[in-house]
View 1: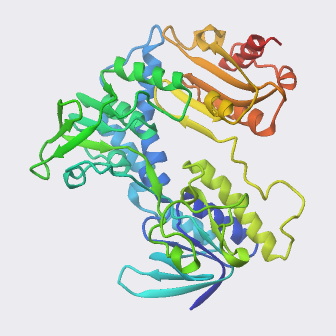
View 2: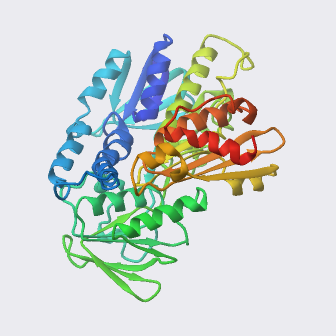
View 3: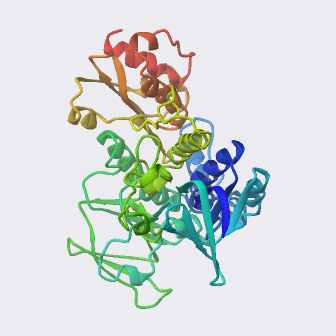
Length: 470
C-alpha cells in the first residue's frame, strides 16, 4: 500500500488542476491515469477541434472583407499537421513533466475504489497497486460518448469526437448523427476542409437545443449556406457497413437512405462512472455522482469523496471542470488543516448558474447563464431585450456580410442579468464580460456606467441597455 494525503483519479484537465492545487497547499498527492495525461480536452476534444476549426473560421472572415480573397481551398494536409502539433503528436511527456514539477506523483493504470479512502490501480501489465488517502479521494474520470441503440451502428465502427478530431484524411462523404456542439462544429470543420458531402441527422427540430432557439436557427442557416445538408426531425433506424473500410449506408426513419464514407456519432456524453467502484462506498454504480456546493459526494460517510468535472454531470465543459477542481481542491486543503466547513468566504461553493459556453462555428455562438425559457420555468419575472449586432459600428466594420444577434434575459425584480447570448462571427471574446455581469449580479444601472470603446462590437452592450430603456 502507498499512502498519500490526496488521491486524484483521472489526469485530464480537471484532475490535473485539482492535483496541482492540492499539492501546492503542501499535501502529498497522487494522480491515476490509464490514458494520456492531459485527457480528452488536450488530445481528442477542445484543442484539436479548435485547431481544425480555426482556418475554416478565418476563411469565413476573409470572405466577408472587401478586397481580400482566398488564394484557393484550405490546405487540409497542413491543417492536420498543425493539429498534430497542437496535440503534441499524442505524446504526454510535457504533461508528465508538469505534474512532476508540481510535486504530483503519476501512477499509470485504471483506478477503482475498493472502500473508504482506498483506490486499487490495475496497471497495463495486469498488476495491481493499492493507494490509500489520508484525507480525500477526488474522482475526475470524465465522460464517454453515447452510442445510440440503432441497429448496426456500433458494429459499423462509427466515429466519435476522438476519431473526427484525430482524422488522418478528410472523408469525401460524412454523415453526422446529432445536432449539438460537436455535431455542428465538426460538420463545419470537415466541410471546410474538403468533404464533398456532409449530412446531419437531427432528431429534433433545432440545433444546439440547450441554447436560445435563434442560436440554432442561425447556425443551421450558416451550415446550409456552406453546403451542409441539415435534416431536422430525422433519425437513423439502421446502419449497414458490410466491409470494415467500406462505405456506410444509413437507413432513415423517413424511409430514405444516406451513403457515406464515414459516420460520426455526436449524440451526447455520459459520466464515466460505471467502472469506478462506487458500490464499494455505497453509491450507485453508474450515472452522475451527486455533489454538494463544494463538490463533495452526497451520501458518503465522513465526507472524504469528491466528484469534479463531467462525472458529476453538472456542466460537461472543460473550464467548468477546472473551476470545480479549484473549488474542491481549496476545500480539501482547508479541511486537511482542520478548518471548519462553515468558514467564512464564497470560494468553497461552486456557482451553478453562470456557466459560460462557446460554440466555435461560423458564426460563433456564446452564452452564459439561463435562457429565457429556463428563467421563466424557474419563476423569475423576466424581461428580454435583443439587438441585431450588424447595427453596431464595430460589427459593420468587420465585413459586409457580418450578421449577428444579441439577447439578454433580465430579472426585473433585481434589475440584473440572468443570461446573455451572442451569435455572430468572432463573438466569443464578448462572453467574459457577460459572465462577470451574470455571475456577480451587476445591476443594469451599474452596467450603464461601463462605457464600451468605439468602434468595437462591445458597443452592443450599450445598445442592449438602450433597448431596455436606460
